[in-house]
Length: 96
Image (tube, rainbow, N blue to C red):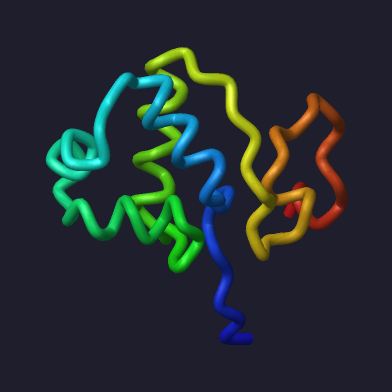
């Protein structure tokens, strides 16, 4: 089973722009902090591309530390895998 799955949420253009505004940064300043080109930030904000993998996770960490409340689109992972787990009894499969 070689399914390609995306870890974590996907950041959309609106959420990226709003995070940058919350941080009171220009595209150039944000690109410098993230180690990417300014054009990359622009492409994300225009919806041409989306951050993937580690960069998506880094945006989430930055948002949480900055106190930015955000909503991003779910990833390709099943809903159960992306939401925090509730306290519950382990299933039979999990016990073995």
